[in-house]
Length: 293
Image 1 (cartoon, helix red, strand yellow):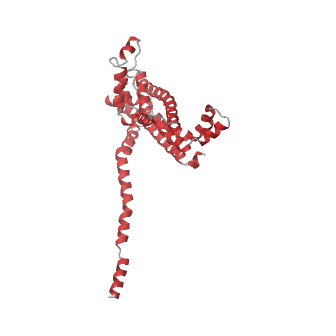
Image 2: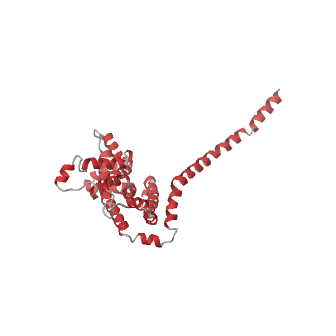
Image 3: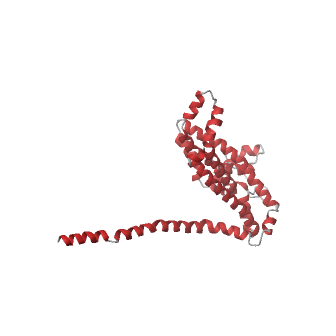
């Protein structure tokens, strides 16, 4: 009986079942990666590649001719203007909000954080509708604006409001965790040595948050230049007047001017590629303490 017990124990030790289970487990990451790659390829990579294929299918001449069109140039200028104004406004707001939230305890702090995150949860189309309901001819401030001959909706101001709204949270959300991690020791030491608030901000705070701030600036700029939903509601989509670059792409495609549409889309796609590259670099700088120095 002892021999049988030993043989049974030897058999159980030599059983290939654990090896098979390990082999099965080892396929799980590969399967998950394959599913992720397939999904990304189907949803993002193939459509993005198709934009470049269609844009360059007839060579570079259609692309060059497209960028000579005045309406496309006006759309690019308008989009750049919106981003150029929205970026500093959101930078000032983001830094102020991040500083207030991380360096002060006050009632409504959680509410303020929720308000900052509001553009993430509200549809851009709804955001555009809110601007129309406030500043439109029949809106809350419509009569006052009309009496003073101030045009907001279907003009540049409403487009700017929509752009600022949708791109508002990025800088604050990138800077807040860094300020939390940084603490107040360095600022208190600088204050003890006689530095004023402005010197503390530029000499102590900015060097510590610079990578997170740049990361937020890149995301804010990309969101501002690529916004479609909110801007389409408040702009009126008038060519060479209130037509941003994303709106131009849609209008050209609707009018079967596909070469021009794809040419303009290439510009937006290149912006996305540059944003992803900068995002990856700055993300490493932000989350790797050794690279911040």
